[in-house]
Amino acid sequence: MLNWSDILVFAREGAPAPDRRDERSDEEWQAVLSPERYHVLRQAGTERPFSSEMCSKFEPGLYGCGACGTLLFDAQEKFESGTGWPSFTQPVAENAVAYHLDNSYGWERIEAVCNCCGSHLGHVFPDGPAPSGLRYCMNALALERVKG
Image (cartoon, rainbow, N blue to C red):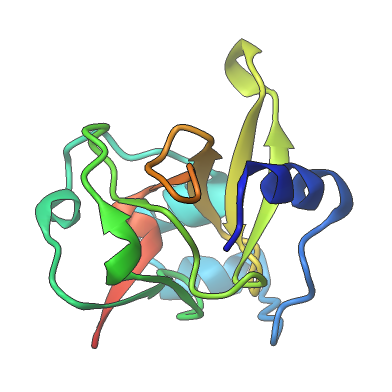
């Protein structure tokens, strides 16, 4: 189980290597993603809070990257954070998500990206529920629910 110390180490030193890499050109991503998904996933945009039904849905299943399909989160780790974005306590695997220090907006945050294709997912914070204490605050547009 990952904890905040692990996330900080991965943000500074790099996450474990992904199982595969998906390296497409910007033009290729634009061709396969909707403009909204492209903005979030490839331009590190953020959707409006509470703009997706995904926040309030808690059915079993897995969530993959909205760009490349890599499995990222299990619905069993999903929780209601009250933030307006889908939140999870853990990724499905230690190497599913990569982390980058994000100093935009005047404070330090940890950006979460798909470790396979580098697409922006959201941010991870140390204010989640026990036992990990992590809150992966994800953009719903960055995720694709896979039936489980």
